[in-house]
Length: 83
Image 1 (cartoon, rainbow, N blue to C red):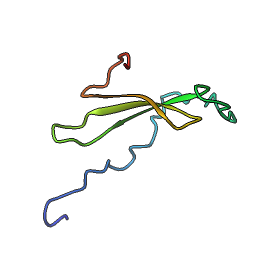
Image 2: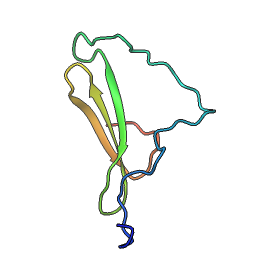
Image 3: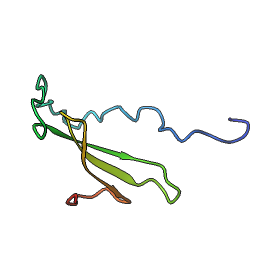
């Protein structure tokens, strides 16, 4: 790959390393087991590769049923109300 001048699209090294000055917040749901639907939700934000660029995909997931409650695709990462 080096000879051909190509490289992978994976993130570079140390992308999961936290900044030493940023606070670490504890997980408030440690030891909680969801008892029924709509008891615990989680959000996942990731970027995905598409032809026009790297848009963000945000999804709210019900922990009990693993059902995607709502999702939205956006070109910029900003606070909006998911529909």
